[in-house]
Image (cartoon, rainbow, N blue to C red; front, side):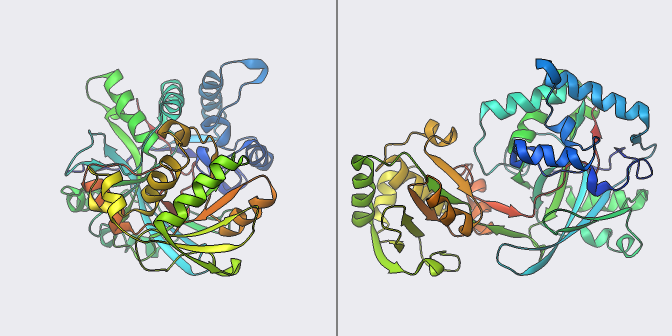
Length: 417
């Protein structure tokens, strides 16, 4: 069961910063060095300075994050609430499919538990490096700085919708054109109604697996009970009409020698039905069937639609996997082509040796002029399949899902002490 409660938040004082849009940021794991510099150019108080810290002159970046957070509190840039609140939010956006959507969510605290049925389910694998990084940051700042994005069955929004008819606490539009509106609800009756609505819910992590496992490790290290047993989450209903998921495409490199190229070509011919298609129709989104991909390489520059010809190889290659996992496009590609044909190990894939990812089909094709040897375009993974894989206790290959848009970091922080 999910134990959900409001948080007594630390947040930016809206009177102390010109605009919240100048100080929020995307999740840390999608920010490169150039993007980090752009964010800090908007404001020296941008949250990226503590969520993705860099210390001058080789000093400890985590200590820099702690000192910066404390300095911003002393300067009045950040202010602490005196009463707990739930923070409903909406995100109005245009997806990669060109359609307009509005996604509704709720920022709150959720008690940290082990993974398991009726509790919290992961759907993607994690890596030790990012977990070490997030744990050191949490230990230094003693705050959750960014929300974990999780999905739940049901409709908690109905208990909050009346409050969202009033003016929001803040409204902003980010650099990608997504319009964010956030409300602050201190009403105890609303808090109790939401907690009761979600008490029996099983949560599915959509984005933030490393942060959730960090929260578990931090809570166990501190021990006992207290605020450290809860973590900051944004909860979105599985039935929310604005919930969308898109595909992550695979960009392969290091195929310059004839051996890997021939092995990949032979495996494709042996396992897939191959149909040539124009590059403008290469994206397989919306195509029916199991194991359907768009494929193009840098040598021929001809587009091909690949359709798995027979399910038998899946059962042989993944005998212990559930049907939901075996029919997952990302798992089919990883197992039959990346692993079996190209000899890539799980460690290679986790470390991105010879593989990169993008959610944009246009960027994937453009990468063929920038050193990419071959591109596989993938369909979006249906949310129902994500749930089925998680319910089977399995985790997907990296970048199997692209939940869009990303949640902002910097709207609220959750104190852990």
